[in-house]
Length: 185
Image (cartoon, rainbow, N blue to C red):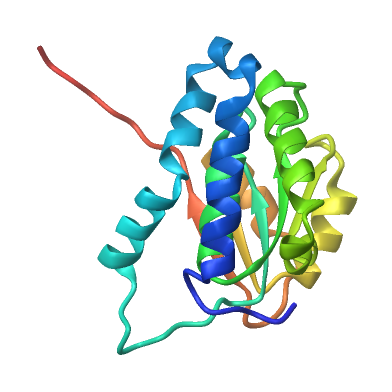
């Protein structure tokens, strides 16, 4: 799992092709979250992110192999997590929710079509999307042992359960625990 440089031009090109392909699908009319995703990952937006966050003086490499454990209640969160994993130069294994959301099927269909292009062969080893039941710890245990970092989305309970699994000594856990919001109008 050799890391790449952040904001690699080939990854930006892949995301732009993904945006175009997703936007061309008639199915996304029924899913505003997919329309938003296709707009967000277009080349102009990614280039703006690069201008904001990429420092030419301090070129960065990815960490290596990232295991993304995404929330089960937000169908397209996995794709945003994958996008940032790719943009930061990493190989990514992403666990999607076990619930069969249509959005996940549509996104995976687009990714598979784009990865058939020869120019994106290098990305085939950097994108793995899996689905398994949350209560099946064997996969999480196995993937945790391979990981250079784990992105753990979920409640405090989920995060604490996953942190119990052994990982590499230098593995970084980046967690997104329970949050509470309040608004007074």
